[in-house]
Length: 170
Image 1 (cartoon, rainbow, N blue to C red):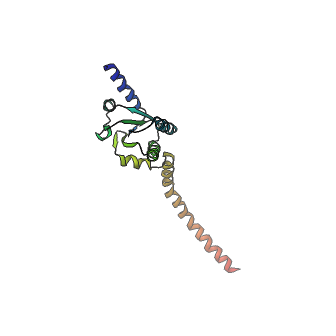
Image 2 (cartoon, helix red, strand yellow):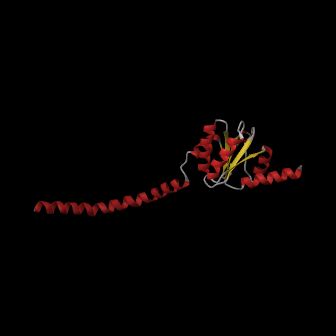
Image 3 (cartoon, rainbow, N blue to C red):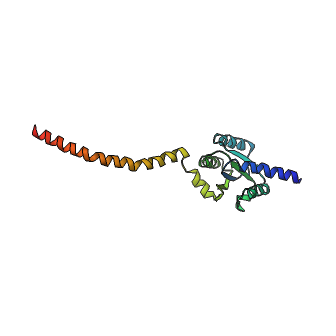
């Protein structure tokens, strides 16, 4: 029995090592069809859905210095890991859970920081990483663009005055 427990802890640990986040869900009253549908949705994000035993999850998380709260470990637990887009995965989970009204997000861990249910929901509302990068680049470009416009305005204004003087002289 002990070797089986060790194997399960290593298996759950391998799941936890797949990404820098883990989302925890209560999958009570979920059908096999619902689970398969969720797995297909998550696979598009590069994420995986695994049902785990709370005791085994607690041991595997402890080995990786991940702290789980008691609320995270109440009732049946499933974990979602993998993929590099944590906000996209959280968004997919939230949409699926709202549509099915069966599953509940219990919380999560992002880079060894515990997330409450509301924090996972806030993470789900973030735009994809590519959009955030584009917005950041836009912010970096904005001061330079404004400076060029200001510098350009001085000679342009002078040209407008000269053109107006030339037009008066005609």
